[in-house]
Image 1 (cartoon, rainbow, N blue to C red):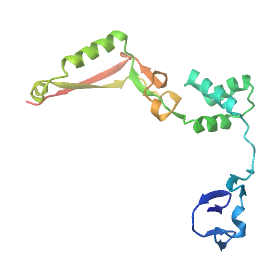
Image 2 (image 1 turned 120 degrees about the vertical axis):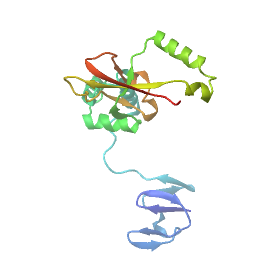
Image 3 (image 1 turned 30 degrees about the horizontal axis):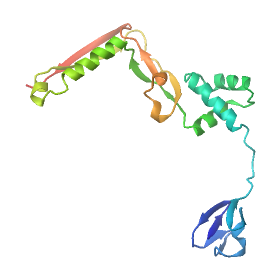
Image 4 (image 1 turned 135 degrees about the vertical axis):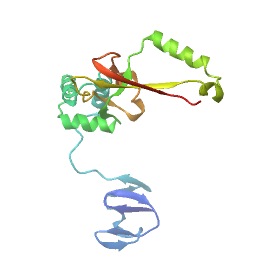
Amino acid sequence: VPRVVGSLCYSTQEAVWVKGLAQEPNSGNRDVGCSQSHGMVVKAKRTGRPRKTSKRQDKQLKAICLENRKSTTKQMKHKWEEAGANVCDRTVRNRLKEMGFQYRKAKRKPSLTPKHKRTRLQWAKERQSWTVDDWMKVIFSDESRICIGQGDDAGTFVWCRSSEIYEEACLKKTTKFPQSLMIWGCMSVF
């Protein structure tokens, strides 16, 4: 049996409060916000401002975003307007959020050539079957970089879904040798 709270329909046997009065689901005001026809509950017509963009236009925005994830909402708005959508920056942000995109700082990743990737994979495969005793004979080292004459940049922001943060288009490439001071240290278990 449907019950109504405001303009939302729910199926339950509980009493509901409509306009401050306790009412049973079978009372006369059951169809406030919902209408019943032929035994089916149908949503009532919504009030408020109609949606400014169509599903087709929303797909166009998605394509614009995926084309260049580093573009700002203002840049995307201009491209979208060229395609026929008359919207503001806020609408662009809202539509992208509806699609699951977030404007976040790009993850940093070293620029690796295909050769780098091959040699790293080969190194890992060679040591895949090592035991704990083998690894105890290794010295582990790490380094930290301090930039000279410049602070760490604020970062690059990209539009991406939470499942895409490590895709190529959502990463910020870093260079190996900027002007900086390197601090190096190592440790081992003997």
